Image (cartoon, rainbow over all chains, first blue to last red; front, side):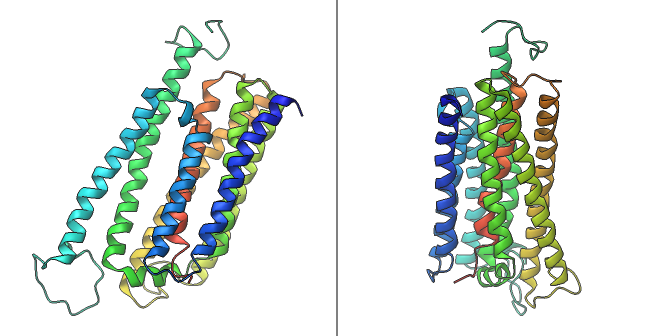
Length: 114
Length: 211
């Protein structure tokens, strides 16, 4: 193997090892009783894995600012989508239901649509 | 930089510009893909907020082992894809083709495991409908989202297999030049996004209710 090929395998292989270690961690953590923190830990580890893939495998870390701006825009619009929708969904669960109806059956639809 | 090559296409006058345009274009597409999968994840989140216990109980019915092995397979395919893209830059043609081939094999492995998993799910009556296995109505919502999200992901992966396989075969036949070809980078970025989506789906589908 040439020195150049070795350098490529070494750099990307280390990221891959980190990804596998994180997969092992999230798999093990899911078997602990952490209550609501089970999903928090799962999502935080998924976030670290995504960051590794995006920054190193996809090369966002060495991209120019235009590309970073496009990536940030995608995340920004996603954040708007989530924040505005979940504000409504969570708020209507914690305040009184603005559309009260009989709650005889088990909850399955979103509170606003019941 | 401005040396004419076989990969240069109209309207570009120089390869560096063409590469910038291709990379910019695929990132815009990937940002829109993020919103596409994001809307499904939002639906999942909203229904999970409304039915926390049922979603955890339903998540327990998924097959953790298939999910975990497939996560490892996709992450490994991202490694071979990243090596292929960087080897193409460095003009290491053999390494590029071998790594593209390995990426295709790992992607196929993912689909085969997913097929076995789907067969098991169907056998366990985990398809929403009249004969659905679980009592709670909201469990059907979880499994509807499970089928939609994993099936759309599998379609994306199949498209990626076509793109990567095309590069591997045409590259090996010398029908296309792999060095400096923007198609290699664009394909690699698409493949990594498919991996990123799966990494996010994994804890939400497979890791619930295991404690």
